[in-house]
Length: 100
Image (cartoon, rainbow, N blue to C red; front, side):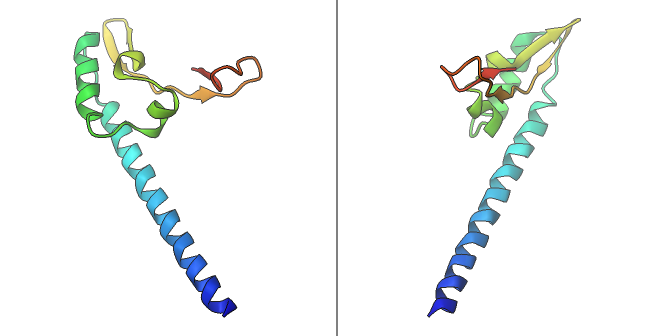
């Protein structure tokens, strides 16, 4: 009886890990597409970002509670998507961390 329970637990664990790997892979694919959103104005990059993330946002965007307008950066006539990271530090407990 123990062997059957262990096998069922192991099977469900392997399935869950497989699904996690697939979802992470999809997020990485979206991020790589976002990295290709480059233009000479912010509006074009935001539009590109919204097209790429229309069906699904990558995990880092969800965790940072960011939309496409929040993650576009322009420097020296070049605009692109910058990945935000939520950092939990002891100074900001109100929102679980700050965006960097």
